[in-house]
Image: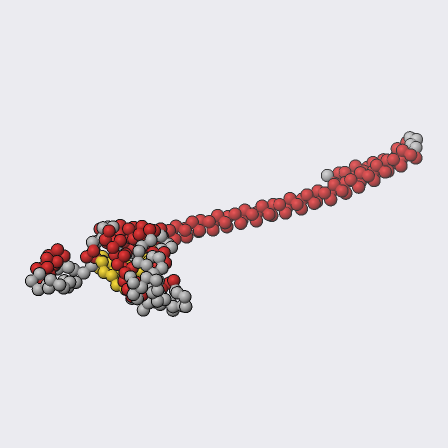
Length: 284
């Protein structure tokens, strides 16, 4: 089109002298035609420049489209690979979950571990659970008032919940060893009831035992002990150490009992009735 336009303009210019020769044309008319021709040439140049720019932009857009299609293809291929990897991860996870579910982590039956872990998550301020040791740990500061062995209400609720787990069939073969601990701050205001920290630690363990028995746990399954300040978790600090004030509950396999409790009690009573002094307390 560019060539045709220029031919048309050239023909127009060539025809001007002929027109001038054949007919009378004013100088003004001639100048107007020359100016118009020049304007048309400038428009043609501008249009050609715009066309070239449009062609370049179109080619750039086509190149970008081609590159985008190639990237999309690569992404779709990568997505397919990711789906395959994800499926493999899911299969590996399910296999691992199945293997773990068949394992018993720690000394307790799996269901008991899960129940106690759920319980410790329900009472995180008072209770922690160590599945590796089969141990529940009660924070004494939230379980008892300072220097006392009376359970706080929330701690009593927690121990009743523990008793519910111990009453399940999965925990029927376990006994409970309750161990009290204190820091090294001496007893002051409750010395009449608890002469030493060892007394206080044992008395607190007994309070936990009583709460379990009241909630239905057979007392034959329970042992109590107290170490006072002699088995701290961390070094004792002046003014008291919260981490060392605690009551721990260990769940261990129940030993075999060969003599029924009632029978043993009757036998002991029968043996001692003949030798008990009227003024002495029977042996305990």
